[in-house]
Image (cartoon, rainbow, N blue to C red):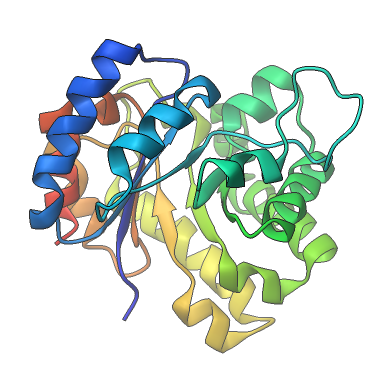
Amino acid sequence: MRKKIVAGNWKMHGSLQGNAALLDRLVAAAPTLPCEVAICVPYPYLAQVQAKLTGTPLLWGAQSVSEHASGAFTAEVSASMLCDFACRYVLVGHSERRQLFGESDAVVAAKFVAAQKSGLVPVLCLGETLAEREAGQTMNVVSRQLAAVIDLAGVGALATSVLAYEPVWAIGTGVTASPAQAQEVHAAIRAQVAGLDGGLANGLRILYGGSVKAQNAAELFAQGDIDGGLIGGAALVADDFIAICQAAG
């Protein structure tokens, strides 16, 4: 049975003082949480998060990673650097990276490979825009994004990854895909992988992200192919994030 995971994405939020209060709350609640819990934070806070969470059940990671191992790439952060802070996870291909910073499917796939080479677990984000959904292109877009990684890394690489379906139109908008809409896409993702490796597909964890709240988390997580959530805004509020984690029980 797939163990559910709830991952928080702080995006470009945080302060040393505010982080400390949030992390203290999460550490206190950690023994009662029924799922795997991780938080992905801005690079400057990795040392603080490592210090706070080491020795607890909580895991942590970063929000992106360079496709390059090292070199003259000013302001880039390599996978090996993230490993210096004991990161377990790293987001790759988040829609904000794709939409705002022009990361192509090929770049996302290269980042996925770079992360795995250093022992990180990539959380591969997939999702369509509102225009793509309205044009009936949801499955084509998500399939293309996933295929780019499989073509470069091989389907076997997915065994040490997590996928996250995040419809762009539901991120930060307050609009959530219905449980049926989300389940339909999650099932299609799993079927695409199953066409190449059925056993791997059965164990693959696929998260839903997009305006997940304490009020809708349980219904989303009850769907057969939804294995947890990638949480944005609610991950910044301790009570809300803890409630979402509890809903994964």
